[in-house]
Image 1 (cartoon, rainbow, N blue to C red):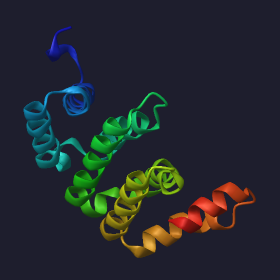
Image 2 (cartoon, rainbow, N blue to C red):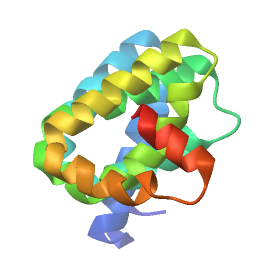
Image 3 (cartoon, one colour):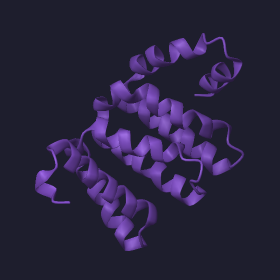
Length: 150
């Protein structure tokens, strides 16, 4: 399809998907370039479109450890760049990252901890607590336990 026919938002989404695909499945040089591109243009792409693409990818059941590691790295760098623009997405990010905290893979647990730490720095402690408060009081024991680890 012709890129000019696409709306501005669709073109942006497509650009993000292309960059993420290079990070997920490209050669190391392609990955490096794509990683730099997504980091440098994080504010331009916007928090919404970025997390709307990254978070569903991280939830994919067919994701391999290496791919998960790369996507976690993307989130890490994007969080740093977006800073307080991540506040509206704190709950969604936590919902995706918290299960890493109980993963059997030691490195997955460390990555989860690292992202939550950086998320707290970017969004601020007040936003983190406000977001997690309902989950701490959740009737479901699994949700309470995972939230307590965060």
